[in-house]
Length: 268
Image 1: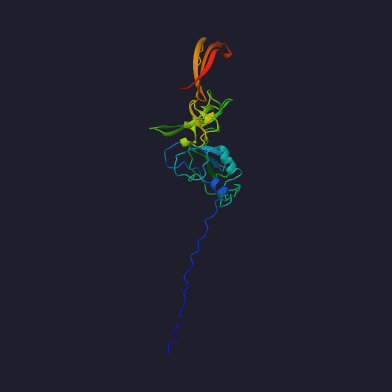
Image 2 (image 1 turned 90 degrees about the vertical axis):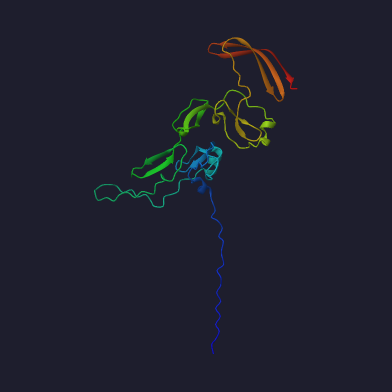
């Protein structure tokens, strides 16, 4: 008589583990990633090697989360984050005889780092190499009232070309009054500048009703270099102002303007 033996086999219960928590340090240690697209958006990334926020050009898609709209946001998020310690410690062996062991270097980051403005490679006293993103403004000095900005141009022969330039922090002209065409309904609520130096040409960093962006000045007036009568029309809060003035150039003192007549009338 045979006994029936029943084996019970329990099916493995799948266990879903929560994704690892991403910290500020993880984000701030990511390499700069411009992305595969060809747009040109000024952004900032945190360089953990130098513990500083550097500008770069974001292509508009892809990339990673080490990307900030301003240096202030970048520093606020990543302040104090240092580079990841190497998996293997650096052993400095003094070379005193021909039988000394060679120095064991940590893995170099030069083959992995991606930078919009080029890479700078350096070697320590042991001959170990490390790379960091170059900053064209680092050694470019500007006079008072201006600061360095990176001008990005695209040519058919060279592709994207970057050049450090000095731009005035406060350019001539005034920001346009906030009207319907510059309000949040325009869909441009992305901060693109901190001051006028972030804007190309004569554009100024102005509030469009939703964010700070580069806008042409409302009154970029040309003043003649000799004595003359000029008439100026300016739009202020839906009123068109009329100015009639006389300008006189004074040697070494700039231009002196005296109003002859001023009035305003409402737009029809």
